[in-house]
Amino acid sequence: MGLLIDGKWHDKWYDTDKTGGKFEREAARFRNWVTADGSPGPDGEGGFKAESGRYHLYVSMACPWAHRTLIFRKLKGLEKHISVSVVHPDMVENGWEFRPDSEQHRDHLHGFRFMHQVYTKAAPEYSGRVTVPTLWDKKKETIASNESAEIIRMFNSAFDGLEGVRTDLDFYPGELQEEIDSVNARVYDTVNNGVYKAGFATAQDKYEEAYNALFDSLDWLEERLSSQRYLVGGRLTEADWRLFTTLIRFDAVYYSHFKCNRQRISDFPALSAYVRDLYQVPGVAETVDINQIKRHYYVSQRTINPTQIVPVGPELDFDSPHGRESLS
Image 1 (cartoon, one colour):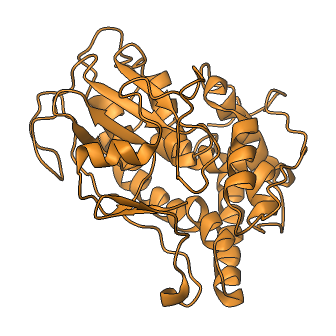
Image 2 (spheres, one colour; image 1 turned 180 degrees about the vertical axis):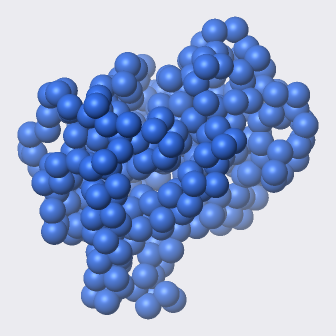
């Protein structure tokens, strides 16, 4: 874990002293939008047109934020249009890094050794955390975006004019956007980021605050999903995929490593079946690598797990029947 300061790498953990022990996530810095015609999006500059082969996606198989983008890339049929490089799960003194001798973990675009080199290629004096996902524009030679919530919306519709893209899939339909945004807001604050707020807290009261908010929301989600198959509108939306990438990691990592241990997801009947339902959507299982997920958290976060020992368990079964077909 570390960050760039004026383009120089510093191995530095999150500073919670100034927030009384509370973890606060740094906002993404690159917020341009890829659009169908290159016109400006809600933020950033224009000129980022959706074109086949123009963009390269940097991800980690371990990171829930990056996982969202891999799911959208897979389901929307963008794999032949957007190339990808996967960082190694170990993120220690040099941050996210590549392994040049590994086909699985090489930087297939620039041949860099470290992810922070991608950031300084885009902005030599960059200051801030070096995160994934990162969407690189080969034409402009810069980072188009490193905000996962916005990248998945670009993937959802901006590339629909390209060959083979699934235009029949719309995970952010206009008539449901207000409800999706409302669900997303609570899930992000208390679940997606909530597990991190519990795990990275350095004060008991801040940990308990995050812990209680997390399980209040999991109880709310369990009740909501007991009577409906998906979170919003009786169909799969981005709200489901944003929640899924946290839930799929919960029992393997967050329950123990982040001390979110009131219950496992497997102890929630509706939530556990819901996770299996989404996991079994064709193509999604290929985006899930539990071994890389566990290795990243337990090896990389030495402040929490100084021994770097990776647990063997738990046994997870995402392939058993979910029984949710009858729900509307």
